Image 1 (tube, rainbow, N blue to C red):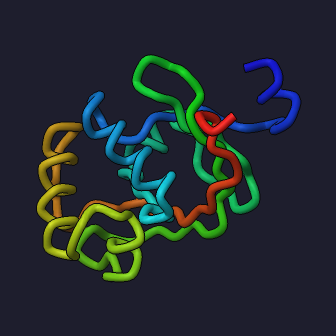
Image 2: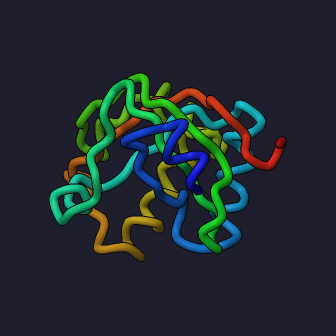
Image 3: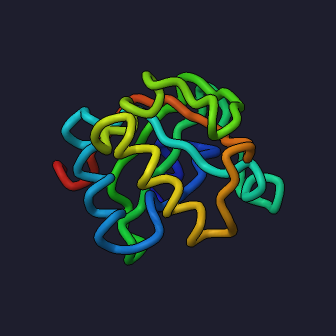
Length: 134
């Protein structure tokens, strides 16, 4: 982690998903290039999660805390769940637009509540480094 902190000053760490299987699947999708976006509930950022910032480089962790990927944020938008553009949903690499919608309804219901009017922070990113490929 020391090398990463030096190479990517100001990087935040985070995990994709809310469990080991989902995290592994999302890391694999990011590694393959299928996943170039992610989103989270604005309420979580308001509660203290660091807001993504264009140009910032962040470290995605495996569920055990091992650094897995380094990404760079290329775009951040705020949008209501019901208004998420299909392009953003598909860039998350989680199937069709309808599969994305159903999966995210379940995800948000498990993690603080789902409401079609809820605000999301949508982030596009590019993969800078696959730390498993070293």
